[in-house]
Length: 269
Ligand SMILES: [Zn+2]
Image (tube, rainbow, N blue to C red; front, side):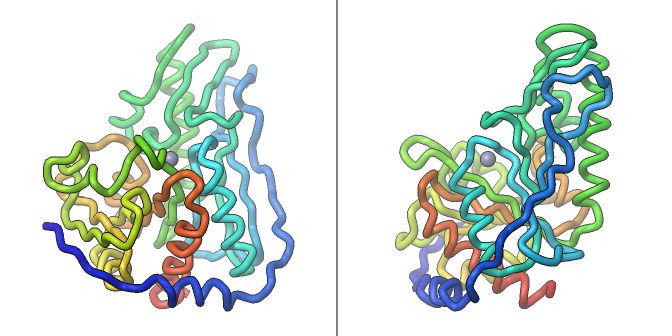
């Protein structure tokens, strides 16, 4: 289903401007430099940056290290909110994480490792004991999920795409390359097609569509398991929202995060 609506983003930009002045953000590096290690048990390279007290039931997450607009926009929004934490995978500035240790070298897309089936496809083993690589990756992914995400009620992921050639909401419309994952979709021609929400709950879909955004609702009952965080979240019945914007679309992504902040306050805080 596709329908077009028009709506002003102004209230959300105004909401952003109403945030009080930022406090300094502090970062805690929880695990890093795993890319070369003699330790056969790896951990995902997580940096947690908090702008105040963590939310007990919500987390924001940034997994692709090359998507800098999303990272900076998230940190900026958190500094205005003065609460909450961003989980940030930092691994050399690339989309994929590379691991090299005494047993094996391999790489993977960090947003394809959250289910067993996803890991089977995601793991690119270059050299060495590839069974060991799968065991390491499974341990690292499960550890990450249980430590940071399994107890949450809302996960807000931030991504960027390439505004010229990359992913846009058009991919999710009937006939598009991603149409198979779409349960419901609303596009608003006032928005850039590269700036859209991808959500797993009807509640988030309704909240964001009536505020004039481009939104895709994932078909949780009939989606192929690619190991992504949206699939895992649907399996766990955790509310998941991907805030997806074109690279460099900072103000659009910030306005989207202001709507997320309103959603969080209405339902979770
Ligand atoms: Zn991404």
